[in-house]
Image 1 (tube, rainbow, N blue to C red):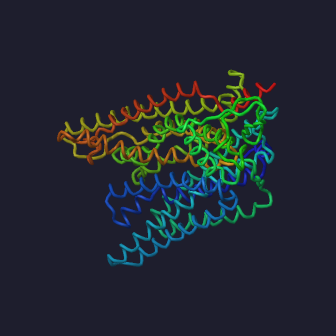
Image 2: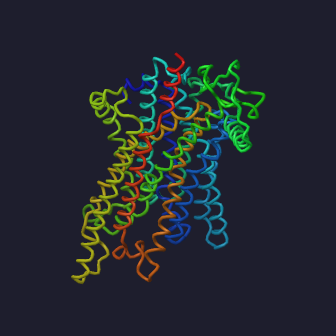
Image 3: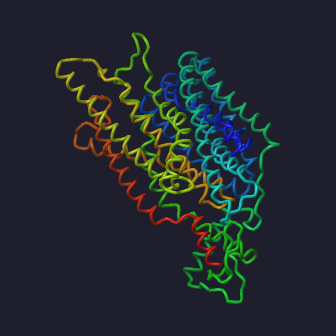
Amino acid sequence: MAGSTRKRLGNSCILLIVIAGMERFAYKGVASNLITYLTDVVKMSNSSAAKTVNRWCGFTSMVPLLIAPLADSYWDRYYTIVASCFIYVAGLVALTSTALMSRASSDQANKTSSSSFLFCSLYLISLGQGGYNPSLQAFGADQLDSEEEELPSSKDDKKSNKKSLFFQWWYFGICSGTVLGISVMSYIQDTFGWILGFAIPMISMVTSVIVFSCGSPIYTYRQRNETMGNKPVVSMLQVIKAAALKLLNSKVKLPDGNDVTELELQGKPLCRHQNLSSNEGLNNEHPKSSIHMFENAKVILRLLPIWLMLLMFAVIFQQPSTFFTKQGMTMKRNIGSNFLIPPATLQSAIALSIVVLMPLYDKVLIPITKVLTCNEKGITVMQRMGIGMFTSVIALIIAALVETRRLHISRNMEMLGSQSETVPLSIFWLLPQYILLGISDIFTVVGMQEFFYSEFPIRMRTMAFALYTSVFGVGSYLSALLISTVEGITSSNGSKSWFCDDMNEARLDKYYWFLAAASALSFLFFVIISSFYTSKRDLELDSNESCK
């Protein structure tokens, strides 16, 4: 990275970005080619292997949502990372052992036992990653300012820009690891075998743990805010329950004018003359904390509509590893006379486009937009996410057009009596849709990380990143649900399903148009909702102004 970036972020941030990239190398080195291992070694059918991978990826993305409340309420981020690392490494060690067992054993009973051990190792990896990823990113963001203030100050714009820069380079780091994990490990696994193919990600993860531990002296460790309580998520749920009971019993009481009531947003008091709901019945021992947690709960509930509108974006990102790859398998893939391009390797084009274009975003696009919009950040977080969502819709439209062209050529070949399963259309026609998804990633995914981080209370920042990853977890399950629903409807009258095994009879083009329409509708609702959405920072500015 450039020296200016190092100065603005600091050595601890840079080190954690490198560690995050090493983790992505390990994870993608396993996940990107796992379906091949399941079909070739475990001898699962294509459909069973695909469902297994989808369920595992969905579960992996959902686990942070379960672990993050524990990390925020009971554990320290640093020690959560350390503990999760050991679980993560244990899963990778177990996975490597399954490859050894599969190679050594030949009878069916041992293979069944090896398969059970395989699934245990995969879900160990999921558990380890569930605590590791959100905690590491929240810990990385903590490095930006050891004395961060949540209410507006003269340094807010600088802090906001620094956070934006951090999330951009964080994503650059994990995409660099993704590119290496997909390209290098897929080749090693196919060429040298699965023992080495799983051992290298394990070694990478062990190395990242050692590097993380060595960096301990330079990290910034955020202290607990006692005013917020030691168990923010638990306290928040208790406050919501108590408030709901009070509302049902119609016993809402306004505080007396002589009472000094402070609404603490992130540890800063608002005006004493504001009218607030009584804290009676919420938490008699810590009234200020109770009011504070009630307000935090409202902040989180405000994020739900935005979260829902992002689900279709996550559905789109399930396509490269499934139907985009199936498209590529039927297209012309040869370079020269001997080398065939593996269709799955095109997935690396998404991460590679991010690695190449991310610096241009920071150095070219943002300075231009600063001049055009007179905004210190260039574009707002909401605008950034919206641009990415719109770009993903364009990517699906292009995918539909390419698939329509592929089917047209295939049918012409059938009319001419050709029996070839390969369509004389280069696989590189798929590159634009992959590259556009990479561009949409730069905008939406980085914007999502910054949005959830900025809108969540300090002590729940791990939960913020868990909510971000849950978008892709729920999106994975939603994608599977859509496939099952569409398949059931399109094959209900005895006609062939849009997803039939014969790619020349399948209608993936119609499915892409359906997803594009659904995503465009989701984007429209996102624009409407975001136009009415007021950020936490703006709310605090308004509250601060009212005190003057």
